[in-house]
Image 1 (cartoon, one colour):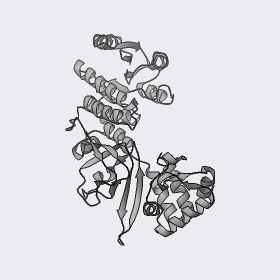
Image 2 (tube, helix red, strand yellow):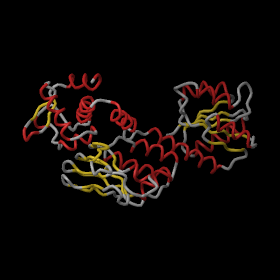
Image 3 (tube, helix red, strand yellow):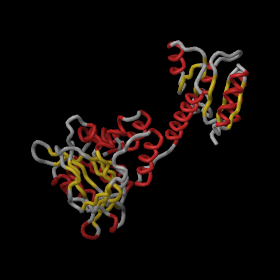
Image 4 (cartoon, one colour):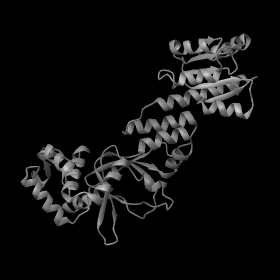
Length: 356
């Protein structure tokens, strides 16, 4: 049962509103002024607060400001209930962080609808979604339930790709967002000279194609190629657009969910411009290790073509091979079964990555 704190100095309004809420199956606590309301907010721990503005001792604005300064009460949804109806009063309430503003005399259904919307919004905001198939599907379901969003493809398909297959190609129409459930994928762009510039190495839990779907050209900005047998959830562009533009709350959660590490991409570009090949190579190996694509055993090493590794660090294949040979002589890397590259000394690689 959701808990509501009602702060109102008019006894009749207080009692009548409390009765409406109790009949609607809410657990209600009441306070006849702002000071008592603040005290009860800390002990009652309501799911939402409804407060009058004009009250003796402390008005509703001061109540909201005070509660927002306390980490324990700052996140509680807040609705003003008042006879003040001027636009400037509404702006003041919203600028302080109020979630809604209802004007007396109010309609019973209007109050209940406002409560329902704010509680559903808050529940959605508090829920944590991880990057796995179960949580992705839960996200779609909750977004549909809470905000009435029509997601056209309720059952998103899992597509299987064999090693070497293309998930999508640069300049082709961007029609889907992909979520990697299993496997590894590299993304790259072709330079004017016909060489590959690797833009990312992606593993289970990563999304592919989100930037392309937001691009005005309507085409994929890079090519995605499968490194080993891969399974990916296919999310149609229509659903993607609905989630991004249909509702601000949903959009913020969804964009946070699908965003890969853009700061890391910026760091890569800076490294490409200013760091030595040796340092870039060490960082690339450590990145592969952090992504779970490369371990320190023969069975978990990475079978990455040397030209792909060269493209990752922005250098010629011959230079990349010489750098790896130097790392092998230093005891940082080795070759396992089927010539899979394995890590032998992470600490030494970290030293090289940091100091060159």
